[in-house]
Image (cartoon, rainbow, N blue to C red):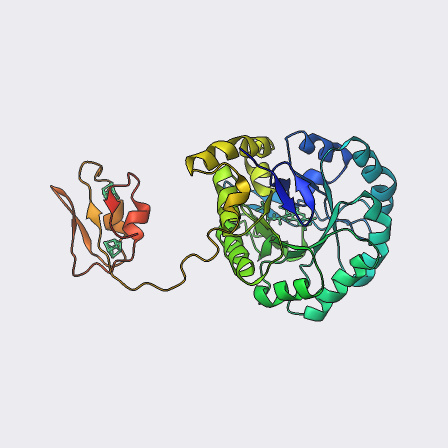
Length: 361
Ligand SMILES: Cc1cc2nc3c(=O)[nH]c(=O)nc-3n(C[C@H](O)[C@H](O)[C@H](O)COP(=O)(O)O)c2cc1C
Ligand code: SF4
Ligand code: SF4
């Protein structure tokens, strides 16, 4: 099975990378993470000053992580003189250096960090619809280095298609989709406050709950832009990697799943990718890139009604309770469908735990 991918000239042995964050925040962390078999490394975002991070700054649940981290708690001096030279001396994979934020800050950082970088990733969460600002950001890095520049989108970007075109016009080399989503507010009713240490208790959410939002953004950008896309947001399995790549990503990153389930998730995903691709009949991961990006070209209006397989139905009643159109009833013989009342919405089929329902989706 070939897992090799090419990202704007970067050659990766596989498409799996860490998303910028605490797992790649210093030398030891990057070395430990590289040992999981990653295709490339991505640093914590470096800015012109060390960040003062309010704490607690990371809390988690089964399906999400909330964070109030800022950029790196180390300033550029430490990255330039200690962390990056020591990492480059032992690392064997491409290094993407994440930097932020303003064009002025990037013009200061790029010449200092370029000698260590195989590419740059620029965090742009403060940019909304300002096309000109995107162009100045890319110019400020490109005028100090010839390394590829990836622009990382914020999920709240109002017009991703327009901004993707702006990245392309400004000679950006790729787009990373997407950052964590927020602000969100996790109130603890006993303490009447958020557990997070940030002002107002706000945080930014990531992990499996944001996966479908990220996939939609990948699809929107892939349809209008030729640049390579790195998909990130909620990935937690080899199957998720395949979904992102079929939708148009050439590489992927993940972070939250490693904090929810453990850091060995990186090697698990890399090891599981060949068998998941083989099940689908592929021998080369490059063959799946973008093959689903033009899917669902039209709306469909035909109503289809459910067929219940009584051999598989365990009479749990979930479909009956869930049906928004009151079209299902439980009878001594099993689930009965009122074809007139059924709207053909698909919910029952998607929720049946034993896959006893077919015919709608
Ligand atoms: C604790 C934490 C710290 C993060 N720090 C950064 C950062 O410094 N720079 C950045 O671009 N994104 C940062 N992110 C966002 C992630 O890189 C990623 O885009 C987001 O979490 C979605 O991916 P995931 O669902 O796999 O975590 C951070 C996310 C978390 C949870
Ligand atoms: S959800 Fe599935 S298993 Fe449960 S009652 Fe409905 S058809 Fe049967
Ligand atoms: S398809 Fe929708 S409306 Fe029809 S039975 Fe299932 S849940 Fe009810």
